[in-house]
Amino acid sequence: MSMEAVLLSVDARNVATITLNRAELHNALDDQTLGLLLATLETVAEDPDIRAVVLTGNGISFSAGHDLQWQQRLSDMSPQDVERHARQTARVLQTLDTLPKPTLARVQGSAFGLGVALVACCDIAIGVSEALFSLSEVKFGQIPALSSPYLIRAIGERATRRYCISAERFNAGKAKRLGLLHQVVESEELCAATNQMVSQLLMNSPAAMLAAKQLVTDLAARGVNDAAVEESIRRSVAARLSDEGREGVRALIEMRKPGWLR
Image (cartoon, rainbow, N blue to C red; front, side):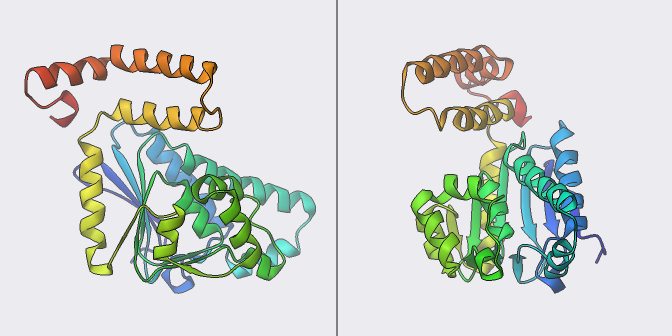
């Protein structure tokens, strides 16, 4: 096994799998791991051939969150250095959240702290039934500040407030009810469930999926008002008149596969 803390593989379908590879440390995240993860995310973002991205981990845990030794080093750093590392972490989450590809979290084990935020940043999340989750920062005198925008969006303000304050653990069933996970499966079903979802994504127009993702992001905070309606009209027209929009309709009428499936 590679000693790299983050692995990248691309299959014949042009699906990229990013794997956190510190199994012996429950895929805890330190500055080097976050730097590698950021570089890997930027690499797949810039590759026009990549159709979808799967984020997962090696070993029994998805991610235990911040690495404890790194936490200790941070405690001894200057305020300027602490802020620099906070900005790096925030950039990782923002890059994952806005990645111009469909993203799927393959949650093969438990996620704590920052690991929960990685799940919340992905478009789709499938997890195993035995996975546990916790926003554990307050146990160590910290707060999940960098994660909070994504957690609030994923599970709502009230639930985020509860779990940020209590640091209690909750299981995969609760994570699904809260909205952190979309699907819960048994361990032996995880690969099949992931492949099924990836196959579903690959049937769709790449440009339309990106446009739909951006649409939801941009309109989510606006509510239903005249400006939001006008923006939705503008984007609907743009999608319909785009190359892939025209090709999709032609393929439907001609009863053939659209060009992006060839």
